[in-house]
Length: 457
Ligand SMILES: Nc1ncnc2c1ncn2[C@@H]1O[C@H](COP(=O)(O)OP(=O)(O)O)[C@@H](O)[C@H]1O
Ligand SMILES: [Mg+2]
Image 1 (cartoon, rainbow, N blue to C red):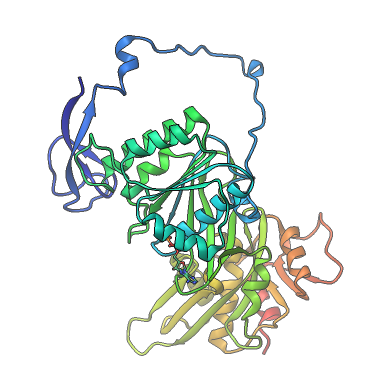
Image 2 (tube, rainbow, N blue to C red):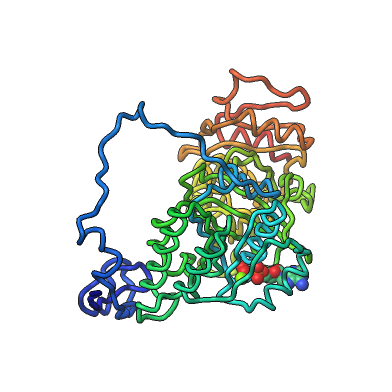
């Protein structure tokens, strides 16, 4: 017999407690505990009760036979790449993102492409009726016959359908709408989300069916229901971008079958998402040349170099407390670079407002973009433009020194490919590789040197 027990669970971080608490010791949020029912005994622990557990024995690693996972590939190269080369059978993948960013669109397109390959696909929508899904499918031009749609939120019915249809690919849109009857708390609560995900994981693994689940992101930026979900699934992908821009970025956050640094870029169109195979060209398309405060950097996004514009606007502050804003780069990194510019170059920035932005809505988080940020700030402050055919790469240290970055050759090749004429990069990176013919490479040791070369008077 299943025994019912209640417990209190923090809805922010999943912290569990036997009694109610005002403040969560896990995440320090107030008033986040909700009483939830836990099922103990019953089906889950059946194997333990009957003692019918299969006993694993240690094996020699050399004796274990492993074949390479066959992968199901979609027509979207960007999507395959983020997953590490395609969809792994039996994997459970979570796609998170803000409402309206295009998660349903992306997964319906993927479903349709797989159905076009004669694979049977089950798209389960807990948020929209089958008619709404059909309207979207018509707009996206979905015609495949083996794509089945089900509007259902009860997990038991869903699992029955999955086991009856035995599809090759399943989409659950979204995990926050799915519930198990035995759990009394509302759909979307920590217990529901966790138990439903665990059950889906079991189905994926036992039947070898890849299941993609959609998860909404809370306003704090975490997938609701939340970090514990990330531990349970095989891969977590975030679909992000600014709602008012047409570009969307699919980024791996966790991946048991591939690298997490990969990102795929898509453009949202009337007829659905279109993949962008040459992101650098797109990111540089709208660049205004010859204005101060703009530089281009070659940043590595996973295995691929991407050229992006870093913009800075420095203007005298009207109030005592200057504003510092950064979009697409770390705020603290910008403060640090401004401090370096003040102390080492003598730029008087303390009474200036500073706005830093990475064009195109991308987020950059590697140190190699430091130099481009610093040069943009100096260029805007002095109101002297950089040369439009220059590119800046390098990490900046606290003494203003320029430090070596990884994969310099790939970055410079990408710059040369897009017609840039000069690269200002760390002196320490020179040597040991061949410089592409059409580009001049200048090594620098300090920010000072980079500014002398890059920001013309
Ligand atoms: N008729 C349309 N033409 C172009 N884009 C549309 C149209 N309808 C919806 N969209 C785009 O699709 C987005 C909604 O996508 P959807 O997949 O439903 O998001 P999510 O599932 O992440 O909430 C909208 O924000 C909009 O950008
Ligand atoms: Mg949706």
